[in-house]
Amino acid sequence: MQLTGSHILSISQFDRDTIERVFTVADSMTPYAARRRVTRVLEGAILGNMFFEPSTRTRVSFGCAFNLLGGEVRETTGFESSAIAKGESLYDTARVLSGYSDVICMRHPQEGSVAEFAEASRVPVINGGDGANEHPSQALLDLYTIRSELAGRGRGVDGMRIAMIGDLKYGRTVHSLAKLLLLYQDIQLILVSPKELAMPEEIVERLRMRGHDVKVTDELTESIQKVDIVYSTRIQEERFQSKDEADLYRGRFRLNQAIYTQYCEPNTVIMHPLPRDSRADANELDNDLNQNPNLAIFRQTDNGVLVRMALFALVLDVADQVDKYARDVRWYNASRNG
Figure 1 (tube, rainbow, N blue to C red):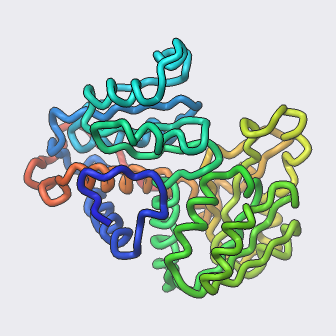
Figure 2: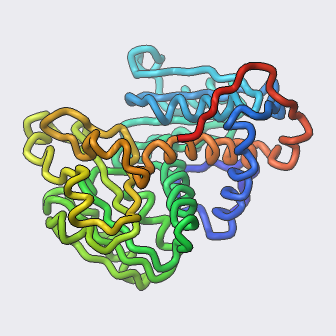
């Protein structure tokens, strides 16, 4: 895949060589994300951050990544503050805002909307999530996290065992991650969900055709006993017709420290794309896991900045110039570990 000047709309665009290139560049971004160094390689460049669906982590992560490379960020949040509320088409919006930006990140509640927008854009567009469809940068940061966590245990992505748990029907993060795993070998996937919220059959069949061992179940405890990764997701309430419908499934698959200790192997990594729903009737990852060293959810968010910095650097063709425009920081810099 040629990244320079390209839209990033689907994980299906990537091959293993491109992923390794992204991850190598992400590794090189560590001193900048940790605020040990400052670079101005994107000084003067503008990111149009267009989020037409609620977001905290993804929106701020993209903005932070661009700022850390020296660029500036302009944001639109919600339909009500955009011209789309006045009836403007995605085509017109793309033509206008791509004239104001050097790269655009977009989130939209309708599947396929970001690709439609990209067709009219004059600059590269990165998909920040389009409905229940895909979230490619989340899948990349998830895989980067899996790779990092397993490397510390002497394991690789090939041959790993992962349980994906929760809303697998509407969860775009698990859709993109599952598609990304098609590029790897001999993976055991256990897909744990209510039958009504199962992973789309098309994705399951593609995984099996690739040669992966895929089990579909609604049983939690037996599914987490012999895996390397537990990847939990929340019930995607915003995708349901009503809160009452979502409530039928909320809280079905809860993981706490007692369940982890009883059923998981000692080094099983716990992941979640966030936000985790910590309300009492949901609580898919209990707060009593916060001190568990295998809880990787905040390492995931840190890794998101690294991966998104890498994507910007590669799309805008400055990955080999970052250090040239760097200097040490001048302010007090607290430790960001832990």
